[in-house]
Image (cartoon, rainbow, N blue to C red; front, side):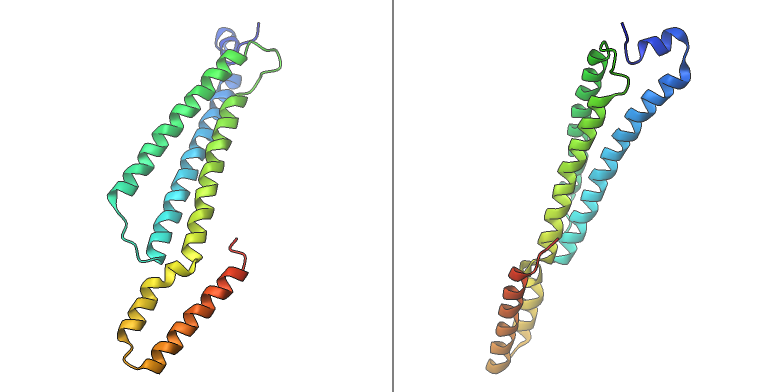
Length: 159
């Protein structure tokens, strides 16, 4: 019977054990990097649309990391259980769980990029220009410009 970690410990094959543990730690660390990239894109989006960064959003990032750690812990449990199979020589479930978490974060980054590039992100700027405008013709010109920008945005791919 072949267990992912146990034979390495019993035989004193520390390099093999280090490799298996390193693979798990690297993928878990990459999951944290993915969450931090999402946080960065969220802060960037908030700045672009004139939204204030709030502490509850930052706390949500910490909560999300905790949720992902629990998923990764289950991946590790599956790795240990599945390691009785002769071909199971790497922590495949941990790798798969990490990739799944990273893909979720990637989707969030794409959504933040879309929100940042949307016409809605320019509303505070439009409102400031309209409030400063005192001439009817100038106001009509501004509204036409922003309307054309919205039409152009609908035609362009975001990402």
